[in-house]
Image (cartoon, rainbow, N blue to C red; front, side, top):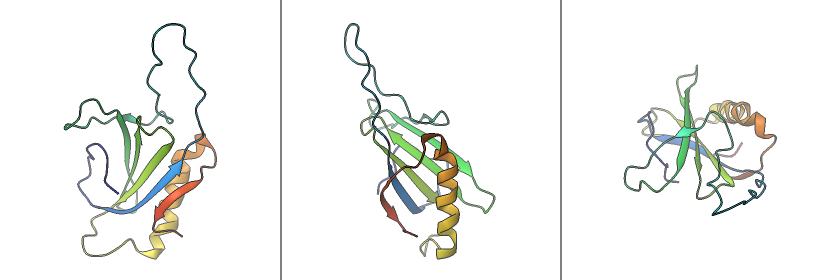
Length: 126
């Protein structure tokens, strides 16, 4: 799964989730074209893609007390998907099984305002 935008953390992605967001209501058009969709969470900030300035990527990064970084990514071109990454300095192994529940709990905490979101794909799964 390629990471979108530019991450502040240069650690590799060791685990990831793809969550399906609820559909947003269609905007009311008074004149002209529809405005671009807004990010689903207030913590998401613009994260430009240097190779394609037309892309609208929003991201959030938070260092966790256990020493890893949680990164949430939302692409306006695919507004029904929210991606979460577990970034850590593991270059030669996968995410330890004991860290998977911690990762999922951190994602649930950040996405709580959206309610329960179905998981479309994940690596690793609990």
